[in-house]
Image 1 (cartoon, rainbow, N blue to C red):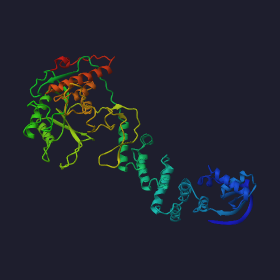
Image 2 (image 1 turned 180 degrees about the horizontal axis):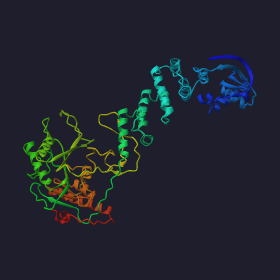
Image 3 (image 1 turned 180 degrees about the vertical axis):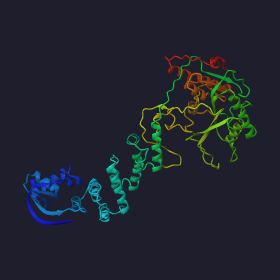
Image 4 (image 1 turned 90 degrees about the horizontal axis):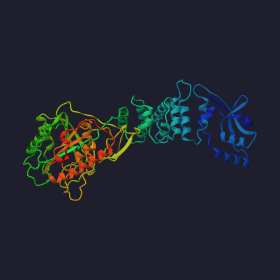
Length: 553
C-alpha cells in the first residue's frame, strides 16, 4: 500500500465523482438537513475544510467530504478546494480498505458499520486470497465496535453470521440485531443452525414465526426445534369429515334404580361408557343405603365398583371403550390408592387399560394448612377397552388459521408463558386449548355445569358437560346408532354431551331428584340438536331400545 498527498488545489466540481465503493459503504440518502446546513455555512463563510480526492485520469474520485461536495454542487459553485492524494492498491489492501481507514473517526449508522465490517473481513469482496493480516483486521473491527463485548471470538462469530446472510438472504437481519445488542452472537448462530435443519422452510417461518420468537428470547433452541417438528406434523394433517344424522325419534332413555340390580335391555349394545362414579367416602348424595362410596374398606369399594363396571361392559361392543372419571381419597394424611386398586382389579378381570387421561384443573380448591401434600391440580379419566380392536378416531376439525407460534398462559409455578404451534385443524369445542389432542385436558371444572331451575334439588357434585367431549369424540363411531351410557348419570351431564354430538344415550340413576333435572337437560339438548339438523333426512333405522322417552322411569 502506498499513499501520497499532492497538496490542496482547486478542482472543478463537475470533475469530482463518487465511487461505487463509497456508495456501497456509506449512506448519503436522507441527509437533506445536513446538506442544507453545509450550504448555509459555505454561503456565509466559504469552504473551510477541503475534500479529499484521488486523481484518476481527468477525473477525481472523492475519498472524504461527499456532503460538502453535494452542498457546493447545489450552490452551483464551480470549483472546490481538495487535497489530492494518490493510492496504489495491493492484494492485501484494497481501495475499499483505504476508504474505511479514512473514515475511522466518522460517526456511522449501524448499517454503515456493518458495511465496513464486510469490507474489512472481505465478506462481499471478490478477492478470495487469504488475509495475511486477518488478526489485525479482527482487532480493528473490535475497536470499531467499541471493544467491550467484542473480543476476538465474537468478531469471528459475527463474521460467520455475515457470511451466512450473504448466501441466505432473510428479513431477520441477524447481523443488525447482533450489532445493536438486541441479540447476542450465540443466539444468532443458534438461529442459523435452526434454519439449516431439515425441518425448516421459508414458508414455515413466514406462517409460524418460530425463529422470530426464538430471537425474541421467548423460548430456547430445544423448544424451537420441537415447535418446528410440531409444525411439520400439523401442517400435513387433514381435517376429519364428520357426518351426523338427524334424529327421527327420541334419542335418550333414563332408567331409575340401583345399577347393580336394574335389568338392562337385552338388545342393548353400547359403543362407549363414560361415567364419574361416587368417590370413596367423599360425599353423600342421598339417604339410600345402597349408595356407592361408603363401603367399610377401599378394597370393598373397588370390588363393588368393578362389579358394576363389568356388568355394563357385558353390554359393551368389542370395539367399545369405558371411561371412568375418578379422584383419589386421602385419610389421615395417607393416599388410599383407589385408582391403582381399581386398575389392578379391572385388569385382573380381563379389562384392558388403554390410557390415563389427565383432567388438568387450573382452579382447584386450596388445601387446609394442616395438610402435608402438594396442591392437587388434576383428576384422572381412565380409558379401558374390552379388546385391542377398540374404536379410535383422533378427530380434527377444519380451522381457517395460520400455524403461527402462539403464546399460552403461564403455567402454575412458572414465570414464563408457554409457547406452542396450534393445530391447523381447530379444537373440537371452544373450551379446550387448540393443541394437538393429547391425554391432558385442561378444563375449568366450574364451566358449563348443570344449571338448576326452581323446584329442582341441587346436585352437589356435577361435572362440566365439556369433560366427556374428547373421550366421546375419539371412541364413538359417527352415526345415529352410536350409543353412549352412564351408569351413574346424576343430572345427565354426559348425556347432554352425547346428544349434542348426535349420539343416543342411556343413563341409570339411583335418585329420582336427579332424574327430574336430567330429563329437562336431556330433552333440551335433543331439541337443540334437532333445530340444528332441520332439513336433513336419515335413512338409518333407529335403535328400538331408545325410542320411547315415556318408558323412562
